[in-house]
Image: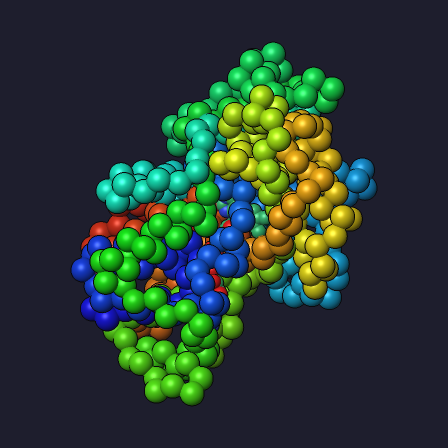
Length: 412
Ligand SMILES: Cc1cc2nc3c(=O)[nH]c(=O)nc-3n(C[C@H](O)[C@H](O)[C@H](O)COP(=O)(O)OP(=O)(O)OC[C@H]3O[C@@H](n4cnc5c(N)ncnc54)[C@H](O)[C@@H]3O)c2cc1C
């Protein structure tokens, strides 16, 4: 079949690779001058089910408010006017048991499946990219651990392996951790990993191209029209007709499908990462670590250290010392001296597409032939390979290897 994919971030590229390996003729449209230049550019790179979180944990609102008050929250709201009331309402509704448990379990399942597919794809094509094995959730106090208890209990139910470690055990595993910062303990996810999302996306694109996928960069697709939803229209060009259209346009997906009567309850949430040259190997993290209290991730990526986090809602400000200071603080708290933070630091702001219930939208849009693989929020990299395989299976009329309950558009 002739299939178009809109968007060449990690989601669009992995989807195209799966579709072409299922025997389809694929064209990818990307409005930017290259691939993986938006949310997939300098993400933290954490993969695996261990640290995925639906952002709708019951009590999250009051919990975040408390953190805000204490100056510990990585959430900034630049303007409440930028958050639609409907989105807030739907988000609050999603922050309830048992809905939250179901959503989080779906997300963990997808991340777990993705990990398997990802390994297979990596082996099949012999891809080589920066990566490290294992992740640690660092808890400064017992309360930090209590905050993730529900998340852990669902992982346990799903049979996903993790281990709670004391402070001493944590330091033995991650010897570069600063002793000046109070550490209560950690949760170790030995099967999770950190890998370079952009690097993988570029390699996956090369493989897809070799298999026949056509990438049209610098091609901005106009919103799909209700009368001809399978026509891809680029300004000043003849429309191109496809058998299927897969929307993988990150934060722009909402506008692309709006005229079809599809309303994606998605909110733009900006995040930041700092990438700095490695200064001293012995001071650097061995695996990926996430500071549970501040939700700031630190990982080594080749010869660089990448620190990332923050949730900025509303009109994005210019990256400044003020909105990246938390990242520097957490880096200094745990791995002071690991990176050259005085020179050539790459400061990046990326925009996540966060659905009101915190999980992506995967499957048919309700309009025949138009499919959605979008709304991945904070976990698009972790869920990319599995989402891509699932969409390709569905489009090809095959049974999916994973239960996608709770991930379709019909839930709204
Ligand atoms: C600070 C930060 C840290 C993160 N850390 C992690 C992490 O550790 N683990 C993890 O799993 N995830 C992480 N994420 C999330 C992850 O980066 C995203 O979920 C993922 O990159 C989304 O990929 P995407 O392909 O959907 O979107 P994008 O990468 O944004 O790609 C969408 C593409 O569509 C194109 N496009 C849009 N509109 C059109 C149009 N009309 N026509 C043609 N092309 C169009 C855009 O130009 C863009 O290239 C992080 C995000 C941020 C911001």
